[in-house]
Image (tube, rainbow, N blue to C red; front, side):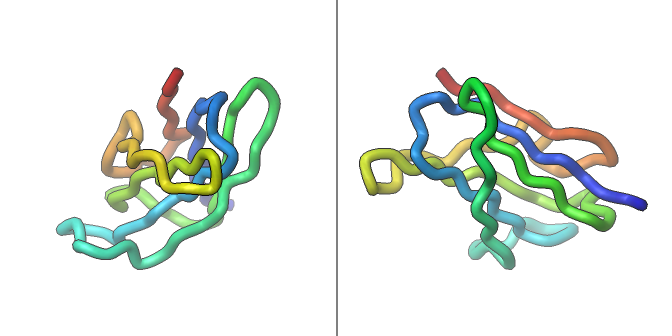
Length: 88
């Protein structure tokens, strides 16, 4: 099965969303927003079945009940492997 694992390390976050913008040109509004699952040591994960190679994405980080910041992944355009970034 084809799939992509998205990860971000944000120990201070209470919620992280994965925002997908589709293939080709980045759109102004995300086509899909998914809540990520919090794992150990502040690692947030989301596995998606399918081929997301070339898909633009970023992460929306929430803390204290409010939006905090946006973080682009290490590979802003998705490739055929795991994609991750670390924020301290």
